[in-house]
Length: 114
Image 1 (spheres, rainbow, N blue to C red):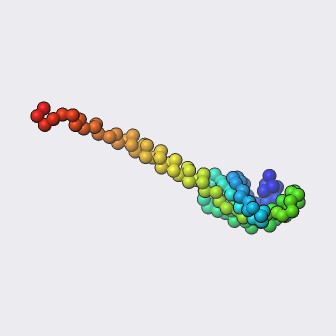
Image 2 (cartoon, helix red, strand yellow; image 1 turned 30 degrees about the vertical axis):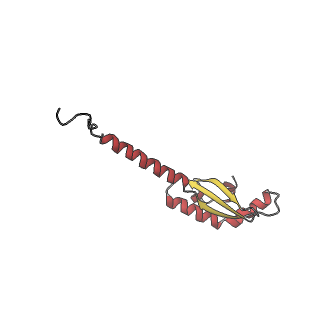
Image 3 (cartoon, rainbow, N blue to C red; image 1 turned 90 degrees about the vertical axis):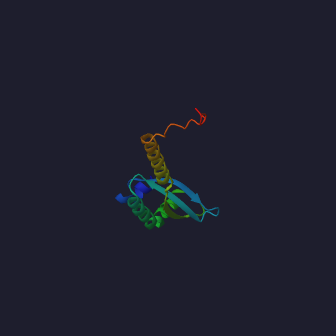
């Protein structure tokens, strides 16, 4: 909700925060974002978010009672995209296997004299 309220940029409309990794000293936070849009749209959204990171950090300091608010660094979460690609490759391989059934197994119980 913070992103939607503070940033009016349409390039972040389809972005979802998927994970936040905060350093032990609370100085840095790596925020992973994902999108159902294409790779370029996600890359543009990450740029917008990193450009607005200072403003978002200021707003977080107003809303949270922490001694230190971490510096925000946004990055694309590609895990879902990679999983989709692997799934698509597996589906393609299964379809290709179904199109080319294996030849009947050779009956090696027969002897030459038969």
